Image (cartoon, rainbow over all chains, first blue to last red; front, side, top):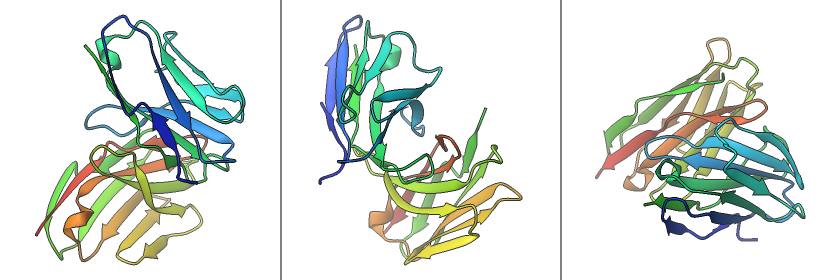
Length: 114
Length: 109
């Protein structure tokens, strides 16, 4: 297993467009997390899944954001009607255990909204 | 809400010297404290972690200390090398992981 992968690595879009990112966690990891990271800041929690169930969403996750993990394996994060303030690095992490187990991060998707 | 503070925000050391990064957290229920290293264009990578039942942990040139009473924890890197240059994040976790704002470490050859 090569770790957590994310696709695409970079995305440039115009304001108002929809974008979708994909995360493939480490095989058999049952928890999957999405974070947003802006320049000079640490990752900020957005949401997480236990298998296919979305258990928690941050207040940062406006109604323009939606995440899915339909089969408990890969996950997608969609942003509708993108705004310039959505420009950030979107990170995915997975863990085989609970919140006190090591989270393994993917390389991230850098989104630029023009 | 939960908060993690981290100091300094930038740190420059000569190769071979030690580097120390300090963090404080607000949620007394936190019981897991990972440290991540992030290089440019990459995701954070775990370098060491400590749990609340331990006061200190060491792995080669890296050590972490935890003072649960004071809600402080620190990262110590000895014999720094240029490849240690990166951004380092501390984090505290109970039901979810809260990250500090990061420390940009530069090791000057």
